[in-house]
Structures are given as C-alpha cells and as structure tokens.
Length: 194
Image (cartoon, rainbow, N blue to C red; front, side, top):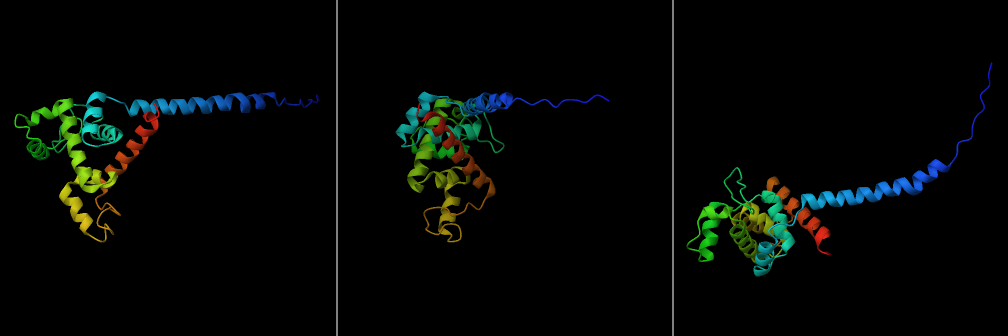
C-alpha cells in the first residue's frame, strides 16, 4: 500500500486573492454600478431643463427625475390615460397652463415638442412647489392632482399639520413620489459634484 504525503498548502494564493483580486472586484463593481446609474439616469435636454427649472425656481435634478420617471426621456411618450411628452402633460392640464401662460397659439399636439413640454411641465411644478412647499407634497399633487392633495391636507388622519402629508393614501401616488425622490437623490449623487 502506498502512503501519500500531505503537502502543505501555500498561503500565497489566499493572500493574493484578498489583497489584489477582491479589491479589484470591489472597485470594478463600484464603477460598474455608477456606470449603470449614469446610463439609467441620463442628462438630456439640458438647455431646456436648465432654462425652465431656473425660471420656475426648481431644482434641475427634480425636473430630470420627473422626465426619467414619467417618460424615460421619450418625447413621443403617451400614457394609458393620454398624457403626452417628456413630462406627461394631460390635456386639461395643458389647457389650464396655456391659459395661465397666455399661450393662445399653443395646441395640445405641442406637448410632443421637448422644449414646449419642459416649459409647461416646469411651470406646473413651480406653481405646485410654490403652493405646497416641499418635493413630496408637490409630486403627490403632480400625480394625483391639486384638489386631491388639498383634501388630504385638510384630513387630520393624513396630515397632522395641514401642511405636510404624513401618509399618502393612494398606493400609486405613494409609489410615484417615492420613485421621484429616489431618482432625484440619484441624479444629485451622480452629477451635483461634477
């Protein structure tokens, strides 16, 4: 019978793995993840977003978050309820904003034009932000409507102070607001320091 000698294993491969390979994978994963985030959170229509967010007192990253969430930056996007364009403007909202802007020549078809859509969307966001004062309540109003949010603010079970929403009672709107806030935070983290 042949006896086998036990060979001592060298610790060198484990040391190489822990000192070189694992950190390289971690760094690659970090940059890969950031690359993915930049791909999924692009900066497009920058001139229009910069101009109209500034004119309406908005954080440009909020506008990018809305465009990303609403249309994925597709100017021809149409929702299942008929909202159009980058910021998904409904026809009755278009009519109201065009009246407020004294834009008599505008047509709802113009919501497919990126500049016009961003101008209208930013005006509306600015109006809502001025009325409600914070991103979450503003975005709840953008999604569910001003009237609905004002009803919620008047309900002590939904808003203890009548100014901020303690809860958002419609799950679709709650999910929407959460997506906007998360997207805005991601945009800020990716681009604010650049």
